[in-house]
Structures are given as structure tokens and as C-alpha cells.
Amino acid sequence: MTRFHQRQVMTAFIVLAVALALCGPQVKAQEKISPLSDYKYTKDLAAVETIVKEPDLQKRADALAAFVKANPISRTLAYVASSYVACTKPYMQKDWAKVISMEESFYSLLPTKEFVQSQKIPVGVDDFFKDNLVPAQVTLLSAVMGAHYQSNNMPKAAETGEKAYAILPDKAMAVTLAEIYLKMQNFDKYLVYGDKILANYPMEQAFVTALQMAQVYIQKQDVVKARELYTKVLTTFGDKTPQGMQEAQWNTIKVISYTLDASEAYKLKDYPKAISLYEKVAAIDSKRDDAFYYIGMSKWNSKDQVGAIEAFAKTVVLNKTNAPKAKEYMEQLYKAEHSGSVDGLDQILAKAKADLGI
Image (cartoon, rainbow, N blue to C red):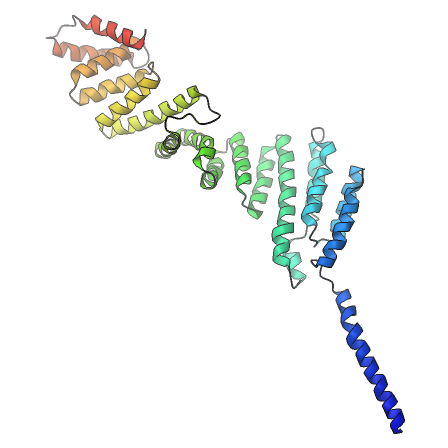
């Protein structure tokens, strides 16, 4: 081969090498465009925007489902999911089974984390999980949960809500689950989510939950936890009635709280504290015979016989559950103070009636 021919061959090789160097990476890049790249996002978004303009909601829903089948890993996934839920509106109120079927079917099209990770996408996967996959999953599950709730299937609503909460422990979902479990009278699960509410909201916002939980604890005979919750609520608001609650309701709450604390003080033989708390109860509700009865018992145990007689007299004139026993103790104490006579006791009873407005 002549030198001329050698130079021609060498030149050809150089030209080919340059061409491969310039073109090769572009071809390779085109073959492996990341589904999370800006280029793919722009393309996907344009496609989705076209779909959501479809006026026929069923056709739009079908097109959105087809898009996800073809593009399971897309930065538009959260947008697609919310757009799909909007397509179920015509069936709401009249066919919840159809709504549930559509939304569950679409949810099954969403990629799993394992699938996404198996694709070994080099950049953007964590953001895709946080900004697209998780919001899409929660959007669909929340919609399904709502449909079950509206169709009065509380067990399925709770099951679906639990799935959503496992994916994203959202405090708003905790509120919803607490409400569902309360409707189901599943009090153990209600207390679980009630605790989550109290941990995530200030008492000024969560006091209704705290009061409901206290009632549940009373039913479960856990007075310690009930008292703790009542105390927290009363400490938060003091004498101020919480917004949205009637004064009469608030007074009832205070009476329950004071009574629980007073009962505990009486059991511990802390009679001064018991008297103070039962007097608070009586100040709010002067017809509470139990308050006057235990004021009488506490004063008797504190060697204040005269005060005990007056408290028992009020219990007697109220003529409720504690009246017979209060009458027995009142007469016993009065006779001890008046040489076995009951003369003048009628005047004490008359005063008790006047004090109570009877």
C-alpha cells in the first residue's frame, strides 16, 4: 500500500472516530432518557394537559389510566391521580360502588417502590417518592376511604385509612381515623388515634378529642387517665368557655372534672381538698345532692359536726338518691349535739331549702 493510500485510510478512520464520538453519546442518551428527567416531565405534562381537557369524564378517566400504564414512573403522577379522582364525581352520591371500583382500579396501576427501585434510575428517585408517588397513593386511598365512609362501610373506611396513614402518617388522617373508630365504637383504636391527635395539635384545638377520650376512659374504669385529660383541658381554658361550646356544656365538663378529683381526694382522706372541690361542684350545680352529701361526710370526718349537719340538710331537702342516708346521719349528729332531741332541726331544713331556692 502506497503512502498516499495509507494516508487516505488513516483519514477515513479519523473521520469515523470523530463521527462516532459526536453521534454515539447522543444516540445512547436518546435510548436511555430518564423518566424523571426535565425533558420527560415536559413531554408528560403536555400529554396530561391534553387529556384533562377531554370533556367526557369517562373518556378522560380511561385516557389517564392508559397514560399511567404507559408511564408508571412520571413526575406528573400526583397530578394524574387527583385528575382521575375528579372523574368519579358524576357517580358520587348515587353509585359509591362504582366510585370505589374506579379508584381502586386506578390505585392498582400505580408503581410500587420496589418496581421504581428496580429500574435503577440514577437521579431523582427520592424526590419522585416524596413529591409524586406518595401523594398519588394517599390521594387515591383517601378518596376510596371517603367513598366507603359515605356508603356507611366503616370497617372498610378504617382499613383504607390505615393504609394511607402507613404510607404518610398525616395528622389530618389521624383525625379522620379517630372519627371513624369512634363511630364504630372501637374505643381501643379510637384512643390510639386520639393520642396522635393530642400529640400533634394544641389543646385549644384538640380539647373535644381530649374530652371524648376522657369519657372513654371513664367507661373503661380508668379514672386516672380520665382525670388527667380533664385537668389538661380545664388548665388550658380555666374559667373561659372554649369557642364553639355552650356555657352549660362547659359547666357540665367542669362538674365532671371537679367531681372526679373530689372523689379521689375523699378516698385519700384529704378532706379539706374534697370539701373545696365539692363546693365548686355545688356552686355550678346547686342540685347535685352527691356534692352536699360528701361535703357533709368530709366535714364529719374533719370533726365539723355543725357544718356536716348543714350539708346533710341540703342533701335531705333535695330528696334524691343520697337523701335517706343523709337524713340518718343528720339526725344522728344533731341528737348528739342536742341531748338526743331533734327540736329545731326543722329550722335547719327550712334554711337549707331557702339556700337552695326550693
